[in-house]
Length: 420
Image 1 (cartoon, rainbow, N blue to C red):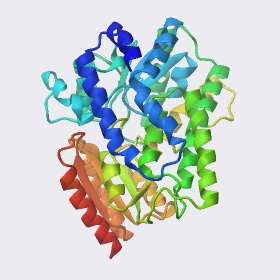
Image 2 (image 1 turned 135 degrees about the horizontal axis):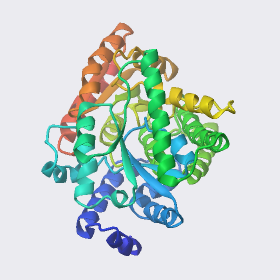
Image 3 (image 1 turned 120 degrees about the vertical axis):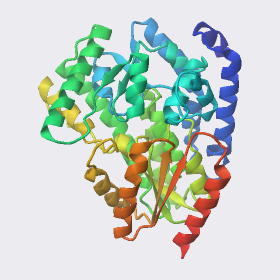
Image 4 (image 1 turned 90 degrees about the vertical axis):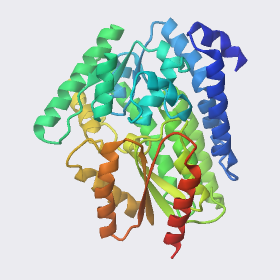
């Protein structure tokens, strides 16, 4: 890391605080992911990507920008990567997921709002997020009231995500996707063409297809990869260079197949299969996953924005006309079953399908504190699960480590319930 201190200084970062952040993240990663006994060897690549997110990856982006490239910060999977990439713009999720930086946001934000907002901007305000100095602008979206007011407060660019799924809402979303296309074209000076967009559609589809292949292994009776490691792969996918990520996932897929052929599981004992549902788990945050799997349960599917919701659907590649491609991109993102939609019957249907496809025996709803959309909708999810005889538990938490004991007690009781 000492090789990057000059770079961090030039980016205006607080080196002392950043050292504390890196130490905290490394310590948590060691306690969670690296404490597992039977990991695929290829997971070393994703560990390195995690650790280089503030160092080597930043250096890559700096080089990209020196060569004329542009970068935008994002906060949500509704921002269409394909269109940004087709305009020569790199979309990158901004820092978040660490409880360490939350208090630094309290100078600007109220304490009783989403930890994701407080963590992300806490890193920016404490000068510990290197991406804050690299982005040309950040793009927010209207998936919750706290975010909307935050974008207003900071004067950010915003994509309007409709709250219903009628035809009028679909048309509004298509207009927003076209408006986003104009944003990135103006930034880079590069016009999105049919050929260029088709190329990036195929590229992003390839990344999502690789994540889908990894998830297929989790349907097996003895999954060769843990839920904790599958989460790390998905988290890394949003930060790592896309070509490098595809290469690393192909190596992982080959190893996972070899493990299946040899009868090697990621778990020493076969536990009940669990679906983890609810709020996203950004890079640096794996608290609930770790507790669940340390309690003898197996997370075989993630119904979140850092899980299946991110890579479940692909964009239609069998198109040649630019407008048709734009509609296909818009439709793919409009199908994201975020809790911001009301009603949200698509999400309930998708959860029930996951339970059947992955042979799930219980559901853990992991909800970020003050994430009202998922917290309220958790009641609807719970009712739908009762109808099909699937037990569930709701865990409301934040990025801190203070409630680990309490959560562990509740999860262990839930595990015993599933064994009865």
